[in-house]
Length: 116
Image 1 (cartoon, rainbow, N blue to C red):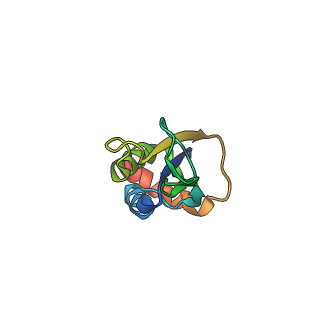
Image 2 (image 1 turned 90 degrees about the vertical axis):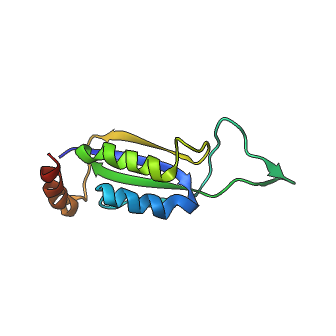
C-alpha cells in the first residue's frame, strides 16, 4: 500500500470543517499543528507593531494514494482556497515509507478495494 502526505495550511476557523470534509472523503485521521504563521504575496498589515493576521493551523493527513486526489479536492473546496485569496493552501507529496499505521492499513485496504 502506498501513501501520500497532504499538508494543509489554513485559517484556524476552517480547521474543523476541513477535518470533517477530509474524513468524509476517506481520510482516517490527521495531526494538527496550531499557531502557525505564514505570509503570501503581500505582507500582513500591523498596528503599532502587532500583527493583524488571523491564526493559522497546519493539518497533516497520511492518506492512501488512490484516495488522495479526492481528499485534496474536497479540502480545497471546503477551505475555499481557489475562490478566496489568502485563505490557505494544500499540497500532497509522496511518502516513501511509513510505520505505525498497521491498524489503519486493514481498514484502508477495504475502502480502496471498494473504490477500484
